[in-house]
Amino acid sequence: MKIHEYQGKELFRKYKVPVPRGILIHDKSEAAAAAREIGTTPVVVKAQIHAGGRGKGGGVKLAKSPEEAEQHAGKIIGMTLVTHQTGPEGRLVKKVLIEEGMDIVRELYLSLILDRETSQVMIMASEAGGMEIEEVAEATPEKIIIERIDPVIGVKPYLARKIAFALNLEGEVFKQAIPFIINLYQCFVKEDLSMLEINPLVVTGDNRLLALDAKIDIDDNALGRHPDLQEMRDLDEEDPNEIEASKYRLNYIQLDGNIGCMVNGAGLAMATMDIVKHSGGEPANFLDVGGGANEEMIENAFRILLSDNKVKAIFINIFGGILRCDILAAGVVAAARKLSVKVPVVIRMEGTNMEEGHRILNESDINFIVGNGMKDAAKKVVQAIK
Ligand code: ADP
Ligand code: MG
Image 1: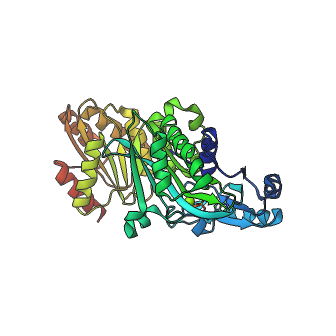
Image 2: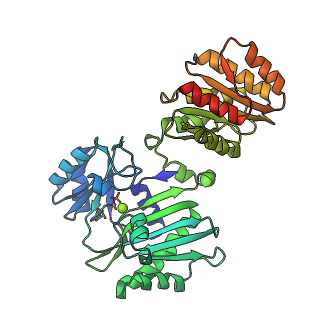
Image 3: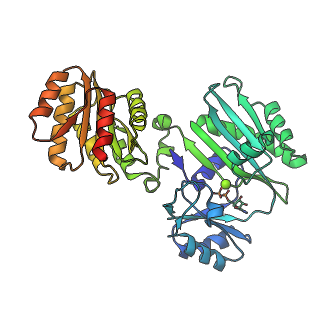
């Protein structure tokens, strides 16, 4: 689960990681008062959306007076902000952070992510802050410092010093960097984050080290033990179909193609994506109804697939184990009747009670296309669209 910059900074404050002072507002009428309360000039008006690259897209503006802050807030709230991370459709801005404008001397980069190869938390740091780390990695990989953390030892001061040295920090700022890095690691581990990125991490004219940006991703599997983090969820920032699917414990991810796929088991779902692509089609989604799906879940899954108007055909690929083929067939028939399906539906099922499942499909008044094995079914669904 992603959270907003202002929420990420609240989390940083809790772990004594320094951030600029800021006030969140939802309406431009609150901007001038917020700027006065912060009391510095300039202040910065920052769009709060779950995507980076806001600065370049026009979502971060400097204001030299409270009146100017109000003008900027008026323009940013309600704008559809397009950045390289939002896609061309952009994202509607509903709130902005009014923040203390910092006197920036250096822009650095610092992030923590889970390194799947070593199963350790990895700290990445770079003197090339303010630019995308992917670009730095491409053009000047030698500018990226990487340290992996032994989970038993954690981040000890020597390791934090090593990173601070590598960033060429000096004097007071060097000293501040040690607790900064140690506390950030605590935040990452205790809050069960899967990604934490500060870009830029800044050194100010008055020799302070601050997180100027905060990009955070929380491990969804750990949300159960963080009710306070659950409250930070912003449904406005999520795909409506994914929200709907999560209500029924369906594992759904929206993709760009036009073949809606309904599959049981993540492995089979991956294989289905592959075979659809291999046959010349493009999946519209990844949908795993799970091993123990019941009729009701099948119906909800079907409804979610159909609500995506890019979907021009549906491919149901089920291996009947715990979810028996007859249950699946009954669920699909019931759902298709209720929802008036206008697109071709190709079904491939194999496993427990397969014959009974096929009988239910054949006897129904709905015209399903039955695939003979995965390859045949994938071919048929691609043809059905043409
Ligand atoms: P994004 O990464 O989405 O573009 P950032 O929070 O990194 O958003 O802001 C973009 C740029 O705006 C920063 O690199 C920095 O130069 C400037 N900026 C952001 N916040 C402040 C601030 N509080 N004071 C001064 N400059 C800021
Ligand atoms: Mg940034």
